[in-house]
Length: 452
Picture 1: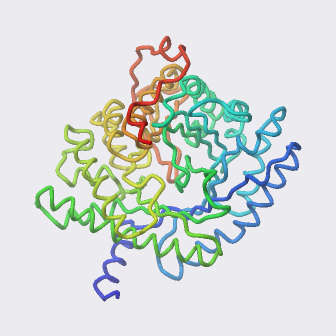
Picture 2: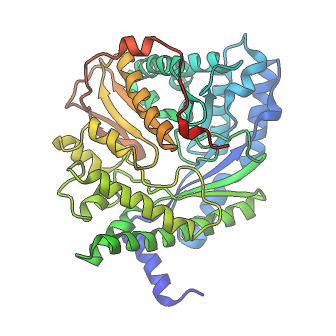
Picture 3: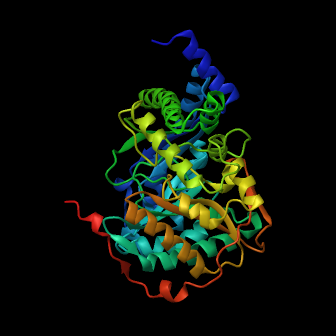
């Protein structure tokens, strides 16, 4: 039973410490929308999304008003479109992206994810054409997000797909260069992509999911930082316990919103994603949590250890608060979306190499990193391959969302606005991996994949 202290504490978290529910994401299966006639298939896609998600935004707004909990985004994820486009291979799959865009505009959601392909073991019908169309699709839509899974612990890494995605990311940035290369900010390359992730740009509705489901992503790095600041000079064990207790409270808020949204929309509740998702707002930063632990600045030696402690404690606290935890669940380190990360990158304390090391212990991977506009496709592919290897060997999700800033060099700035934020162009290692990338083939699955 709630007492006065619990209520006042939650109010403080919301008003002063940036606690929010980052997203209510409705996952919708489109498997029954396939058709050899692409126009009919697109109509089915649009109709089904609007039928299921027509009240999603209003429901989120109503819950936010009634409970006083900020709900920042309402989003939709759908079955990877490459699967739906398979029967109409001779047609341009961008038509599906435009159908998704129309549905997003009709329903009023912030983003719609699922212009995706799963090619971790090879290209199935529909995959190649969809991947080839990503630059055009993202340049001609505003709300559509795209992702490609190029590896997994069970299958290894598809190096042909890795090579292709380096070129796709560059072309996407080039086609949206007049809009600060925003297309690349809506494109994620995964290893071990989860089927129930509610966060963009990587969300899609997996084939093993229900016909429709509600997944919720919580936030709250400001709450964790405030709790550590109040605790003072306690030892590391107490730091971990404090993060666990705080993560429990944050997750309970998300659980309440998720169950209420599912009830009102008459669809099943899926999962809570525990991830601490930062914003560019001051006081809402994962980097600042690490600095509150005792680092002079994020990126200093000790950063990876501090992040490992934070990620582990968030998971342990969150799983006590909900029986259905999924998605990515941990601590995000998107550079342009985190005020502390932005400052650390500008000062030179946080480099691409250090970020790669940090991804071995956090959720996701190299996220929202701006790189020089003349970075070659082979170097981008090398970055993807390295990050996928970390995910494959450690049996965890890793991802790459890098934005080549066309026309800009290291040290200059790129500004997206909103939750996507802003940040400096970070230097990359210029030594070429081209010969390695161009070999193609597949990196074999590691020994830890043989668990059956």
